[in-house]
Picture 1 (cartoon, rainbow, N blue to C red):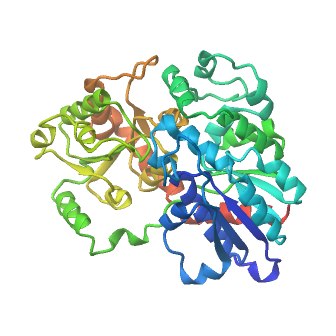
Picture 2 (picture 1 turned 135 degrees about the vertical axis):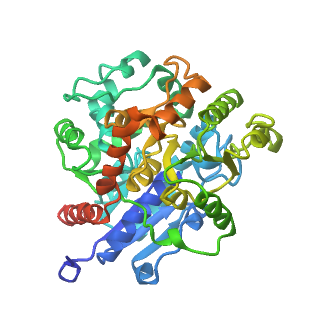
Picture 3 (picture 1 turned 135 degrees about the horizontal axis):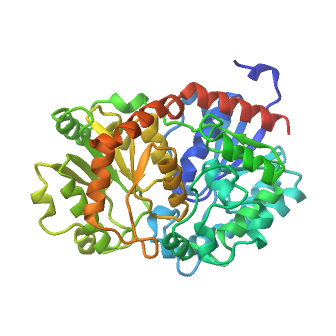
Length: 463
């Protein structure tokens, strides 16, 4: 339904955290709101804005990009503007620099009195006092799902609750009062500390949660009704899921990309659902030892594969070469393909020969895979919250998690191979494969996502 002609145009600023997994869904929401004839001011840094896909001509007049230059901070390499360009232990410097955007953002908002609403991320803990002074309402948009958010708990729980030691985070919290397995493994609670600034992520999040009018999330009632119910109870404010934002599949059949032509030819030669795809996201940096163990597991599975290997940020070329065991690529040349750098993930997943996805459990990757009905081989890495997504997918029986040592996160190649085979071919994975296929009706459902976005639009129009 289009009710855009009868309503007042809102002027809304969008302010995502400096990571592509945040920047892209924020743009998707901005485009939807622009279609409803609201005016969006998309605030980020020049490099991040330049990475975004071009807007359709019909939306250009309703979306204005506002580039703020990232202030210099000792420890942040020059030219870096997003998490994908940094190893995890350097992310605190990006947060320090991000916090210094406060002055430029304040100046922009003072010059733009028409803006009465900001849709923002977890990071700008300094935003509420400024917004209050300028009489601007805040809507917090978490790019994560409801289960991850429910595990985090209420602001008072975050700021001074019952969980003190790392071990406290390895059990399901009492307020998640339905059967589930959502909790950290011990090694995940330790690794998360590496990317914390002086102001922890949880303090940042608690501050913005306390001050927003609405919390919106990248999920829907059809997928996690229990966690959304828990969130309403603990936050005592409107919780509005804005849908799963499945990526548009329109360009999947485009011709003309030589890399894709070669890949497609290889995939066309394989049997239906026989190939597994491996990609660990742009921000996962495994040690050389772990990469080798993963490689041996992939090889031992004996199944055809496509593995996308990215050079870790800020490392020497030779070190990046050594991340894969010597002679590995020659040995597996008949079994699979190793691709370096970027790959057309959605096109690969959409191919009928692909039957599973070994993933780091980034929420966008999970949505892409289940949107195409492909089951998951769960290997969470990068930030700790990806472990919670792995538990959720394992619990929902659409994926199986590779077994690892709880304390140090180490794993054995035999268990990697066993998990791959279970998800791809073993009889005990039959139900899991059927469940993942059924999830296509929720995760790949553009109408459902748009219905959620419509409800979200109405809720912000009514603030």
